[in-house]
Amino acid sequence: MEKQYDAIWGEKSVPTHYKSLFPKMILSLYKNKKVKKVLDLESGNGTNILLLHQLGFELTGIEISEEGIKKTQEKIKDEKHKITLLHRDIFLPLPFEENLFDAVFSFQALNHTRLPKIIALFQEVNRVLKDRGIFSVKTTDRESYNLKKIDEKIYFDVDFQQTFKFLDEQTYVPLDGSEKGLIHYAFYKDQLNKEVCNCGFKLIESTKTKWHILSTFEKVRKARFK
Image 1 (tube, rainbow, N blue to C red):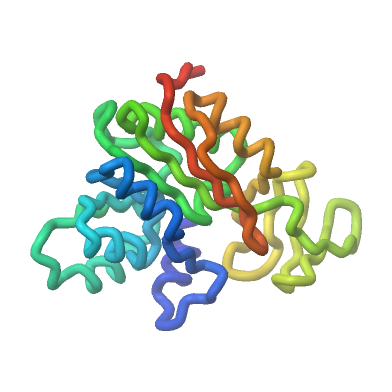
Image 2: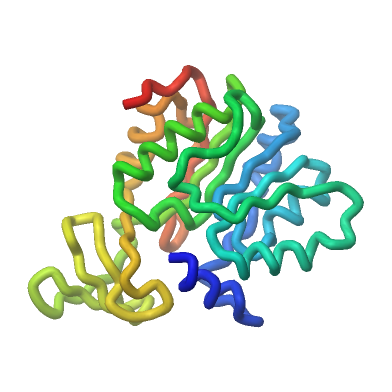
């Protein structure tokens, strides 16, 4: 996975569908909740890291791509205050103490593995969030796929012009393109919200964009680790 995202973030021009600007609704929520410490899971090339930092938040970013880390460092090198960046896989246990962050977000990143690892990440987010902390997720919407069947378990996505092999209804592997060979998981909206709430959260708001689900939650109890 790291090499493929090194290739993506190493390009001068990053494809539009890899970019995810920070929603104004979540910014307003951060301000109302007096959020200070924020964790970005898969910070990419640092766009949202820098935006939130300039608005006065304390930022920590985790990114699997070394190229993404380098791009972020280039953007923040003139900043007076430190931004913490970790070159790491988000699906490993998060290297933080309990109840550290006021908010955690992950935009267009946590779907790059199988469902059990994603649920384990939801539990880890709960662990590192303070009580009443905010968790925001933007991830692939299974209902948005525009698929044409080619062969048994093989489909062509008309919108993205890519071929996928489905391992089950929601788990698939791209057979071409920049994410070739990477396991993906696509949520249904109600399913995503239920899985996160099962990990100790309550839903604040959930909407759909063209291809994604955007949901925001509040931590209401400690997750029950399996």
